Structure formats: C-alpha cells, structure tokens
Image (tube, rainbow over all chains, first blue to last red):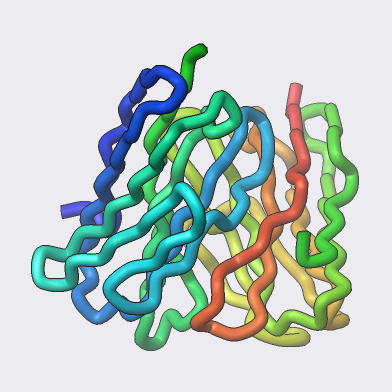
Length: 112
Length: 112
C-alpha cells in the first residue's frame, strides 16, 4: 500500500457544484495532515491543515477519519478559480520528523 | 509566501556542466527541503536540512549534493548535469517538524 493515495481524477464539475476528494494514508501514527493546492506550473500552496477530526474554512471542509485512515476535502459552491490540482499530504512522523508524504494529486476543473 | 526566493527561476544548460540552485528564506525556519516534480511522479524529496550544516538524503539524492552554511540559504548542486535531471525544482521551508511546509516559486531546469 502506498503511503498516500489519491484518486487522480480528473474531476470536471460546473460552477456551484459540490465536490469531494478522498485520500487514504498508511501511517497510523500520523497526527497532522495537510491539503495543498497546486495551479498549473506553480508551486504547491497550503490550503488547509487538519490536526483533529476536521477543519472548515469558508467553502472548504476537511474531515479526518483515523479509524479508516482517510482524509476528505469537500468544496462547496465551486468557483472557476478552484480549478487546480489538490495534494493530500501526510507527515512521516517518528525519526523522520518534518518530512512529508505527498499524494500525486487530484485534478479539478470547474467549468462555467 | 514565507519569504522564500529561488534562483534562478529558469535555466537551460548542457549535459555534463555543473549547476547550482539557490534557496533563500527570510523566516528563520529550521527545516529546508529540495524537491523535484516530474509528470507522473509528483513531488519527490532530493535532500533536506534540519539546521546549519545538518543535511540528509531524500529518496532521489543520486547526482545531487546540498550545502547549508547559513540558516537562510540552502544550495542544491548538480555536479555533472544529465538529461534525466531536467525537471522543476522546488525548495520548501518549515518552522518546526509539525508545521506545514511552504514552497518557493520553483526553478525550471532543462538539461540539453
């Protein structure tokens, strides 16, 4: 099993739609999780941090299910500007403190 | 974002030449990382540093070396560039091991 697995998509949704991405991870000791977004040919940018059961920031909600070892990202009322690749990121933990596992990303396209 | 500057932003060079990429940060972050990103592979860790003169290898360190003589600077060197090292290189910094990483704008390197 890979350390972090994401559905690569692509997800193509109309403006205003609600879309959800899932991410599974293998390291049960991970305590914090991150979602990044990456625009084409740009650097990854932090979208949300998840330290407990979940986090909400405006239209974005991240939920964590430790028992099943997955993290989800929900985007409500999608905007054209939400079109990007979303990376699920999980710390390695332990002696590799600071190092992260990056998923390969889920591509989202929001159309008018 | 997090005061990270990568230089150069773009470089084209020939096989066999040495190349040095620079990452400069103004946040006084302890941890610094070099990644490469290629289609189909996502972000892969090359080398990282957890303090001045403290560096270690990542998953794809062959052909690369790093140095960190000051907190703010982390250099990545390709001693003898090969075409397989054509990629986009990202530097990232991190304040503590439990915090997210923040990325520089990236360097697009082409080895002909």
